[in-house]
Length: 114
Image 1 (cartoon, helix red, strand yellow):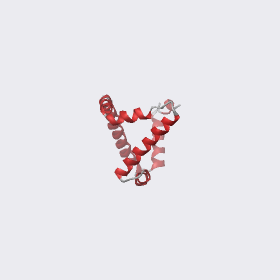
Image 2 (image 1 turned 90 degrees about the vertical axis):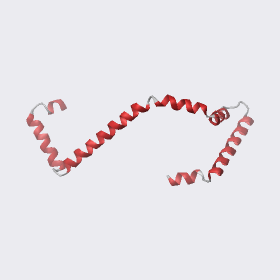
Image 3 (image 1 turned 30 degrees about the vertical axis):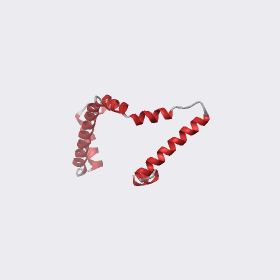
Image 4 (image 1 turned 180 degrees about the vertical axis):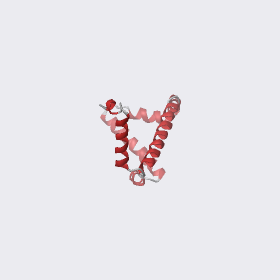
């Protein structure tokens, strides 16, 4: 259907006139300019994504080095004893409260500033 729309120059001319009538001759240059800017932004973002892909494995090696993260992961593993689970959760809660106390902010404060 769309392929048949542009098979003759008269149809293209009619479509162009309808677009000019609908949007006005003053808005068309601005619309084309903003479309061009959007296309350029999209192109640069896609190129940035392609450049970031090789850097992703390097970031994963730095994450493996952090000993605090590995300690938290080990603490997050489920224990078979319910009392051990409760104790582990209490330790995590205490660690989080100490972290929040050291930073001087609460989670509700950080959410309100966003």
